[in-house]
Image (tube, rainbow, N blue to C red; front, top):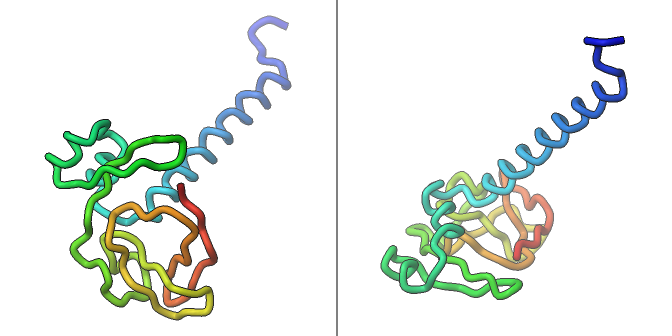
Amino acid sequence: MKGKASPSRFWKVIGAIIIIIIISVGFYWLLSLFRVDPIRIINSWSVHDEESCEKDGGHWSIGVGDIGRCIYDTNDGGKVCTDSSQCQGMCLADSENAKEGKCTEHNLTLGCLNKVENGKVQGTICLD
């Protein structure tokens, strides 16, 4: 039949839309981990050289795969917190049993971390 989409094509399109939605939600979740000024997050990944990073007030850091990133200091690093919404960076605890943590010193903290949300550690996340 002409003019009518086949059922298999329909499901391929629906599958592609679902995948795009999942990727978008995942990206949003990743950004929400940092809870800092969105411009600083973008700059962490868009500043491509050490000189530009330092001119912008950041610190150049080499991560996994020898990828350079521009890391910015937060103004509330070390402050006691019970949720990342109280921090410019993340609220991290020393252990999985903690009810409070401390705000990170930088907008981007790498490694395996105990993120605190709503007064409870949400489990260990690893960022690199």
